[in-house]
Image 1 (tube, rainbow, N blue to C red):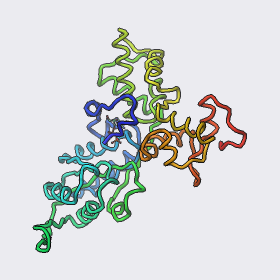
Image 2: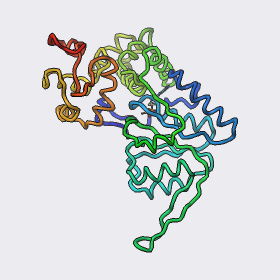
Image 3: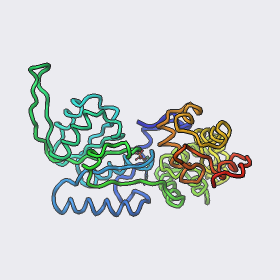
Image 4: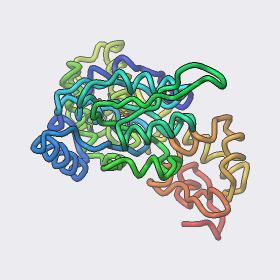
Length: 334
Ligand code: ADP
């Protein structure tokens, strides 16, 4: 599930695919993580066993799904894709698990949203490669243990803290994805422009990278919007000025903050005097689900120093007030 409501530029699930690198080599940035993962995969290959289960944690759009697909590609095994919310009953998961072949990868997006019974079934399956299949109903029902071939679960989550510890403990490796520095996004944008046949002039990739919220998915999306702009205006080459003009039309500001980011900052500053304000009040004020505010919006605002989380709630920083063109109160949190 993509958090559609927070994406003012629309959702483009199909186009995510065409820009997805197939091998670890093509995955841009995150050098430490790539080296760890490479070692992990090489060791499994040398031992001729499927690798341990892997957890990918981090905000949306940073490459969790992409890495999962790369792992399966590198291991040359099929990947099955599902998600926490798609599994309503433990039985749904049991039937997926019992259909897996030896060494296959099962990717579970938003694994923190699995229903509790499914979660319990999953960690037994991950540990013992076994599921108990219920046969019959009511008092006569019985469970038959079914042995599974060895497989690898790759879970993705935007909220690692919500995973119960027994489940978290079953992962042999946790990959933490972080926001990308501008230089890495610049390279990613150049690569995507090459794939899509977009002619970027000098400095344009950099302009785009500065406004992409440290997020590959957003970088790719902004690149497409800028391409639309160039097509409509009959530009052969996209200059940095075109990037600025196009993105201001889409309400992406100079710091890459989008509509929701700005709504959150405005609410804290204007409705709550700069905070502290609790997540639920804040989310209600901007008309967004608190999970979206917490997982999509806040990590970037915190990381860029616009917002701090305190035990009493969220507080806007001096930088936030200034960014909104307002004078911060003297005692504002810096
Ligand atoms: P997540 O699963 O974390 O929400 P995805 O893996 O779906 O994110 O990535 C979103 C888009 O960004 C995909 O189109 C993918 O191709 C691209 N992408 C993400 N990370 C990278 C990367 N490191 N290098 C190249 N492309 C990337």
